[in-house]
Length: 231
Image 1 (cartoon, rainbow, N blue to C red):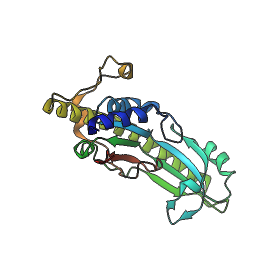
Image 2: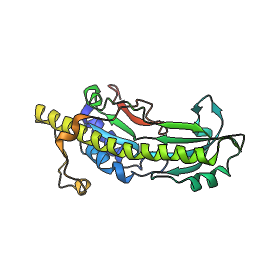
Image 3: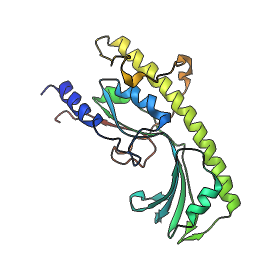
């Protein structure tokens, strides 16, 4: 079967399913970015998160959290307040970890040159242990300080998403001009109904990438999977 035709079939199957993130849907702050990618023939997204603050209860190995074995005590995609964390910590029986994770976006790419456009890496995270075996190891004042840091990172993450959108849009337009036969989904399509005007001069900086495995939606950044030659 023609490789492009097979990728189209694979894409149609992928987009017919729910977002593979724990939430199961696309966050508001990343909807336009997801639509931009899914509107191109050479991409489709499978899992996404605009950024989140989470409190996990489980075992830790150094600073490596195995979240598949953890209980999610609290998760929010908005700024977080101390009282919510204190209440959630009362449910902790193991080692509770407060984390901020930036943009998570998993993308299937038709070929290597398509994936290279998405080559970015992120270090904009936060991970701090708060309790051990159910016992709180820090003061409420310190928790309040950590949340101020996490909330600031959340605001910066939104700005980085905007910059990344601008950079990606600019790169894709440049690629299209270089390959005029590349088909783009009709912008009158409903998936573009909420698209905003963008400033092309805002492309000076992009957020950085994380190239973790596609199936692991707990790793911050952007993951790309290349469509295999012999699929």
